[in-house]
Amino acid sequence: MGSAWWRQRAVDVVEALREKRVTPLELVRSARRRIEEVEGKINAVPTTCFERAERRAREMDHPASPPRGYLYGLPVLIKDTLAVSGVRFTRGSLVHEHDVADHDDPVVSVLEAKGAIIMGKTNTPEYGLGSNTYNDVFGETLNPFDIRLTCGGSSGGAASALAAGEAWIAIGTDLGGSLRIPASFCGVVGLRPTPGVVPNAGSRTAAEDNLHAVVGPMARNVTDLALLMDAISEKHPEDGNSVGAGDGESYVDRLKAYRENLPTTIAWSSDLGGSVPMQGEVARICERAAKELARIVGAAFVDEACMDLSKGRETFHVLRAEMFKDKGALLHHEDVVKPELIWQVNQGLSLKDSDLDRARESHKKLLESTLDFFQSHDLLCSPCTMVPPFDVKTRWLRECEGWELETYIDWLLPTSVLSLTNCPSISLPCGFTEAGLPVGLQLTAPASKEAELMCAAYAYERANGHHEVVPIDPRP
Image (cartoon, rainbow, N blue to C red):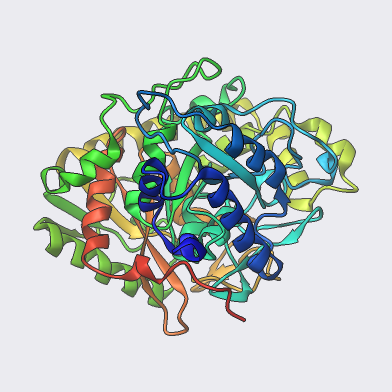
């Protein structure tokens, strides 16, 4: 058992830690061995802090009355867009190549207070921009299912590491799909929570009152995801917008009673009302999974229904650009940052008040449509990505099913337009292409209904073995 801890579920490993069948130090060393064994094949965790982790493992002293989500010394990985004190903090950019964080991001301090041990930082595209994980500091992160292919992004290092058994749980972020897309590509589970459920860092800009970048969990199965959500869904003094888990009830406990929290009406949309292109094979796999979910939970199935997302692409583009209006200093580093970042900053600087007014009005109507939609539907199912994993050398998709994708963020449309709803969305493994590549089904629930969302995902997961495929050894 000791040599195969990396194959176990996080909940089982935490139970072993609690019962002292394994010590935190033994587990840290086991995780280190697995990282050293496979990291050279996938490049998912380019920054490690093994000595820091071993020191914390030796010093760990568990409280007499552990709080909800206490992890008893379970190792965890953190995306390199988040700060871990004393650890290299590059954001995937040559601008910060030699930076070392002098503070912890809120989610890191919460995790360490809950008994987690940080093992390292996962790779990300530069500043988390885009959904193919590569940068000029560390290079490309590869997909364990086929190391010629992208793992997605921007939390791609986290997803790849989970799929290859380098960690049991990991922390990422999501603005337009950065937790969900790599989860889909790597056959793991990623949740974009309702804004405010998990604490985030820094002061908010006006733009972020409309479009929210969130911190969220990734795991290899829904139960482990719920465990991590129990640990991180807390209010935090550095994030005045954080509200935690609402009623404070354990997500893991809610899963134990999952039959009491299942949807009665499930909507399916292959293309989000004609808002996004979709490859046929991906759509067929996801539609089959959505119908299976409805059958499993005994819910009514509503075909091709969703909120009005017809203005979603334009609205997302403008609100995302607004977030870069104050990033003009990056233009001084044009020689070392990627062209997509320069384009994004220039988009922000060129915005007119009329552009913003129009986008905010469209967003208001989209939110109203979302509220109306969830009056008569409990859950929306849709494909998480428009294509399966593709060649890692392709920076971003230019075309799908005859639909020209004009910018580096257009191929994120299946997730980015749903970010505008401010609702929780999860990517759940739902099958494989004929080439053996993972496909993720995206489930979206009303705001603050993370527990109900995870219960539906758990019901589906229990009925099939898609999640049991990982962890795997990286495949050539």
